[in-house]
Image (cartoon, rainbow, N blue to C red; front, top):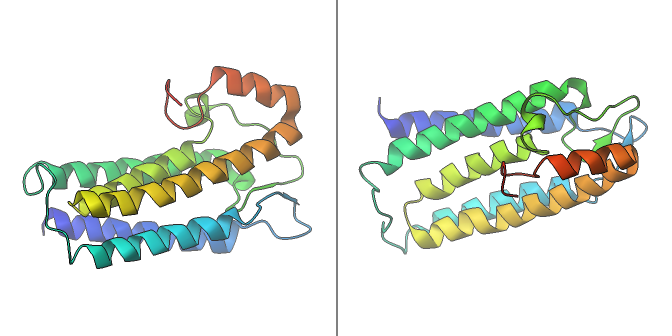
Length: 189
């Protein structure tokens, strides 16, 4: 077995995990305060469409990234593993408060421990690392751009919508948290 096998196996695990999360953790009407603004659907559509277009474009663009056949494949696999780990840890840390759509459930509290002490949105950090791994896996700059830019814009919109809901729900507590913790990239953004 080679790195390509492990990459595809982990990608399949990721996709199945995301489907299960959407199925089992989406907050329904009457279960909480839903503030999603369609971001759950937007994320799915944008990610799937970007990846489909990237696969189609791959037929027309040659491999042009440095290290495509040497150091890039292990880097891609490592990023995917780290992304999956960060996303899973963030979801487990939130526990029953995690929802696949932007929603707050009764009795929910602001989480500031674990990965949430490093960034405000660690599950999206993990998602972005997975997206970055998939984009680098294309090994062409054109496909990389298609695979990473639209999904990242969708994630940033989702973060914007989520932060509005969190500010409404936790007011000054969330403002204090946002002053001391970056959104997505530790120490940067």
